Length: 442
RNA sequence: GGUCCCUUCGUCUAGCGGUCUAGGACGUCGCCCUUUCACGGCGAAAACACGGGUUCGAUUCCCGUAGGGAUCACCA
Image (cartoon, rainbow, N blue to C red; front, side, top):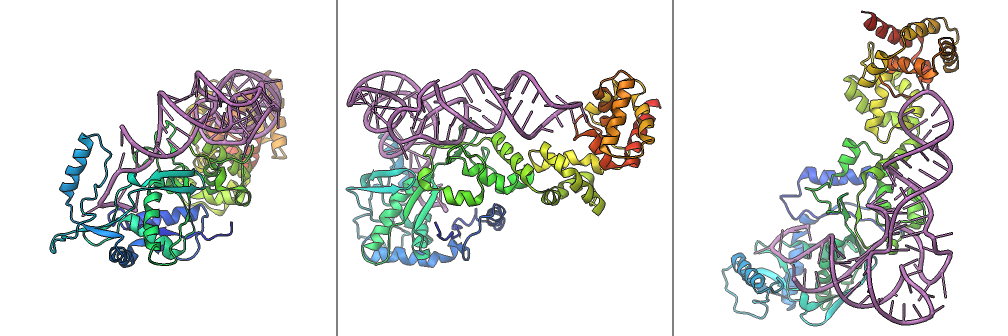
């Protein structure tokens, strides 16, 4: 829609807004290629301006001092609970002016008590709430710091925010924020109401809401631990709660063209890791080999415990076309690539050991002999030898190829065996077979 | 509990009164391809929460029930 994307860090809770927490947000946004316009605004730095607005409201009679203590308010709520009444501030200081001079106080908004407010939400549609349901919220705490409710409204106004798009856990807040905006607008020009869009929250696979304690992960977990591609995460998230016909894979450009808030569903969607991995696999296959080599290299270096040489990277690059068809994420890709780069003797996994143990006697040695005499060390040439051997020994090709695969890759699964051998080269391939022959005869 | 919101295959969704014997994708299960595993191809099982209306006709509109969600701080 050609708008601006402004980034504001709401860090008024000093305990939670640590340096690493903020860095993780910026880092995650950048990884997903969500570039914001202009400078990052830090809310805490604007506390004085927030207080200024609270005092302007107080002076204009749209706010008042409340001297109720925490204990007093707790007692009030307990009584409301006991009487099965809704829990809300009862306005006990709303109309008083006998202010004690020395006692601590908060500033509360003098919100309208009659009538109702309707929000034309771009996602939820028109939503109406009676003003009687809303109580007088705290604007400024007793220590003089602003609450979130005050801060957002003031910052949105000062930053020229026209569209507030956020999780629907904020829908209720919108009504109170609107009351604040209207109070300001009543005596200061320029306070306009933004358009609201409240997007449903995402739930875990079990239907329970995603939270820190329950399945919610930082963006870095999807990147680092799970080895996903940013475009895959973006595509998956885009399709959660929104769709465009039967389209599953939607590029950034298409998303920009097609996406509209009116198409966003109103019910929460469940997070399905299987589908995310599937989408990621699609993007892995679509990614060019060079980028995959760069992305997967650090993981391989960690697994191998050494830096990759240029020759390693070249080997990786040449094997990538086949490897990427078999991997749903960068972790799997790294694991599946290891055997190309290991130094002899390579380890055998359980599947490989089993194949070697049940192999027809002598096949490995015979194949080794045939391969040693080969002139053109190509996939086609190697395959021909293997086929000839199988035919002569009345074996299926698999009975020849599988033990060979185990010896050469250390695993029962790999890309096409003869392509692997061609890539590995004569010396390495024959050496790996020799390694196995040495251990089995010994 | 009050207020507000939601409800199509197990999951994400298409559907915006008749084209629905309800489409796609993931997952599941078969088959094909094949030296293994994948990829790819073909196919199958699988849903309109329930009950009332409105209408010539409801998946689509309205109401109720049930279920689910959000929120009710001197947190954001």
